[in-house]
Length: 427
Image (cartoon, rainbow, N blue to C red):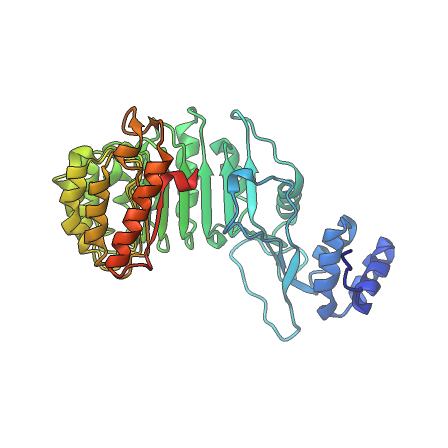
């Protein structure tokens, strides 16, 4: 039988106060600043909206309300508008602190505005969008506050929301506070004027460090990326299942600061795209490069070798999954790969390669002392390949034998610290 820890006197006092919300609201003016975090957390967790609202209005006591949810390790596609978020006051305004003058409209109550920190998930369906629940409450309170409330959003997750609605919502947010934007937009129709305005707002997110865009429409105008040129802190760019064929120079050419992470998943990259990337400012700074689900079979020998040579001084993670690479092409890439002295992980599964070909790759890369994780393809001898991506009739006994053989080879090369997995390990 599980036993819960007994409530502290402070917890009991908080519960007693919240049992009568009218009394709780009246007590706010006399409540010591140090008790605001405990009371606000209990009020939000218990659904005491009247008390929460009154605490927001008690601006002489508050400077920052923090609703942020840790999206770092969560599956954002499964988030919900009404998911509970932790509610903590991270900072209180002491009498000795000086208010910060803002360029926005002066708060009509002549007090320093309260900052509300909240990670937002905005979800639509089939091109329709209706804001409800927690995001709706926060946005409405900020919009009606006449500058007394400032909404700081660290992570903004957007799932199939029309660009016109996004433009309106971004008009309420403090754009310079946004650190990460995850945009999933499957709808094939949008007004170009709305799209341009949205990207102009993205360009104003001066502290944006991570931008993820998935399911970009096939007619997405790459020229709009030029509006992101002011971004001076962008380090990670994820382009997933977009249609970028031949347009990479337009999408990256406006960025003045080199990227550290570049993910291009299923983007139908061309030789010109890879050639541009090898010659761009990003090549000598990239730490993570993901090129999975692109047909790179025609780029070896040629642009892909050159690109790997350019990134060899900084690259730590490389993903070549499902790139239609054959054994001879991987063999040709080995000299460039062996120069990637900082490489820590390599993914090259879902390419048709024999056991001997995999052994050859590992034997060469064993010299890279920082390489700790390798995900290799199911050897051609262990399955019947239907095409470059699909296979059937997996021989698990033979696959286990091959895996043991690979581990024995690494042991002989004194690389027992290298972790080996194949695509069946992730099913």
